[in-house]
Length: 612
Image 1 (cartoon, rainbow, N blue to C red):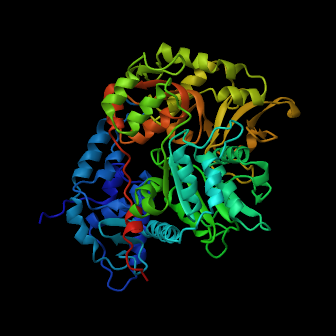
Image 2: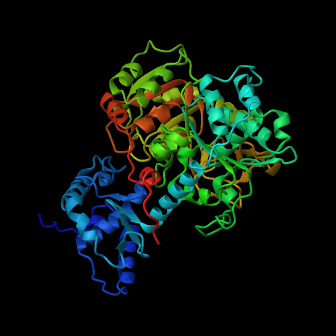
Image 3: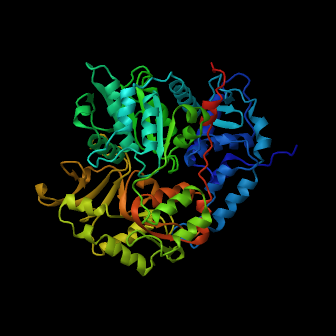
């Protein structure tokens, strides 16, 4: 066997392959483990591997994958885009690659982790790291994954409920209001299947009717409840905006007679429903203090990370119905885990719980977005590029307009981008009331794949500000669009909330932040952390929809550019897309599926013996 090459955690840090947090963590854990009987300080290479198990969680992975020939999870940490004050990636890339090459292969490292008392175990002893087959976890992520798998396995294996014939007939003849249109055959089958089950995942693309189905399903569940009982329903979503959209959709879709048989508080974020505790990773509700409800509907499930899903499931009683809504093809959560995709990949859940809707009523044959999104979802890069680059496809206003991403530079944006921004934001800029401002803002948004670089959201937002408001003064200028980036329970503002700075007539026209659906604006000095949001990352745009979008991709491939990102970006609109890209970048992204290391589907399908 080859001898391990030399590398230390400090060298990983010097190469920017790990964070200060990761380095501090491993140093602290080794000091603590030193008190364990028989402890031997691990080799520097082993210390590097333990440090990397922490680092990869910052990139959305749940564990470090030691089952491959190469360190594929680390490639995304090699600088691929230049800093804003440099001409190219330069020495940083060279140092990162050299340091990566100094690591031995995962196959060499794996045996070195099997005898580290006080640091690594199979989970049966309280160690900070858990090695499960070829996956190395920080223990808390292993615990989260185990909790989700165990709870959903129990849910999925509960005995099905017989659906009365009169309800089956009602579903087959159901008419949606106010259109009077019947449910599609796939929607009928989805409702009937979900009525039989305690736990259901309804997945489907935009316009397939996930929330419509949820409303019909709730109506029928209420009919199954005893007449003297009102069904207690909780509507939940990861963000405040998603919760508001769910609340509006479900309440408008439920007949008044059905609403009268239910107790439905306003839709809430998952954090709020769990009972947020300031300055604590824990919540008020858990398995010992579950949320009181008979049915839970959770929208935008693809945005829920593993820790949040674990804490939510821990607080949901097995006596309740649980319905998860989402699109398995959309981007995964920013934080660790691709939970929705893993659940839909589980053989057990495919057989017991997953219902997929495929017929979209949002996109029509006259929109070029329809065939493009289908080609992207199928990872057909050649067909996707052929559609994107064909100006004849789509009716007027429903086309894909292709632009050259190499023309996007610092301080030098193409005239066609400037003209597009002026034209598309014109109504918003002239809006005189908050209601009109929000209505016109929904007509257009710029979506970026990255935060940094010429095509990143930071640079694009500065450029849009210069285009629209060249004479602006101060931070809180009139008509500035902001995005809240943290949860703040004092102001009742949450990560993802979009606000607009406008004069407040009740405070001598002083600038204040207005938020849709909120009766009073928030004084600017009380705002929690926020950023300018004429342009947003595609991640932040999940759960939103716009009349038209401009999608800006970098001019070369990066690990963040994936099929899911392209799919999510172009399906934020029902009509037209202005797309800045290159053929090579676009096709590479369409062919690259998001891959996150985790073992959730395996734990669901192949449960191991209980660990003490």
